[in-house]
Length: 346
Image (tube, rainbow, N blue to C red; front, side, top):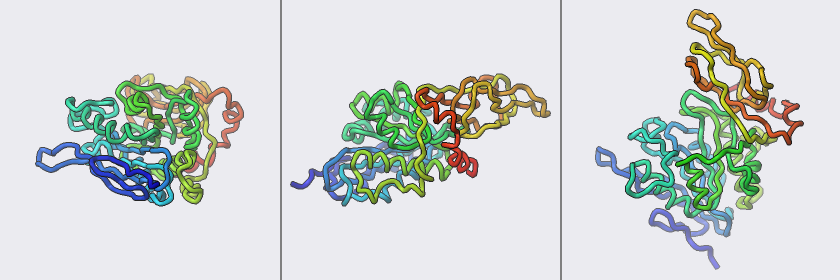
């Protein structure tokens, strides 16, 4: 018996086909219509239904490119299951390079949304009903906020065995156990019964090969771990720079500036640091040192502030403590040397 077609946005996608769908969103003040673009790859054979989305924040462009490349490697003729790809959720913010919506609301604090709320709430509701409600697993692609950079990492509920399995299958340098945030897509999707991986990597409004390559390979590895891909369509290891051991972390925190001035950092993304290590310094405009910045915990650097000017209390360096059940990985930073070298090259 042929597999049933997949219904979304008022259309049906037949088994073994890939189809572009537009989810009507709103009308611009100029009178033009705006829709959320979706690509559905509906495999011939039954299997899991997975969504991959990017640009919930309009300035986070890395995930858009990740999805473009993933779609180039997934065929409806050989896929087992269904992939629902949404490269740009915050269409209005994406068009202007803005993190937020025109009303300055954060879409990722507006889920699950409603049909009668703000624009952000309506977009969130549309995404929940047309995408999340039809899937069992989602991969939500993000980058760091403006003037920050993130080491490629997966954030997820690592206490759930199946979510943990998918997070480790992704193969990012770090898998971070992250609590649910009110109004986030991950929280709303979890309440609806779907598991979610959040991929964080790179900088806003900028492509970099490490973040994109790790993201592409990670998504394909997850699909493969779910049994959705034939072996020849598994992750392209050359593009990803090869799979690396994933460090597991259950806690992280930002080291904050203890003075205002011009920031100079002495560490890179992916560096393993000990508590008390010097991470950089803050100087005034005449070059006089105001404060030194030291690590307040041992761990791996997963985020850095790229802004040259900081004020007292600003987040400077994000450190993830590595799980104590991985003592060998903490002691041997050669596991991440090649990855750090590629990050520095970009």
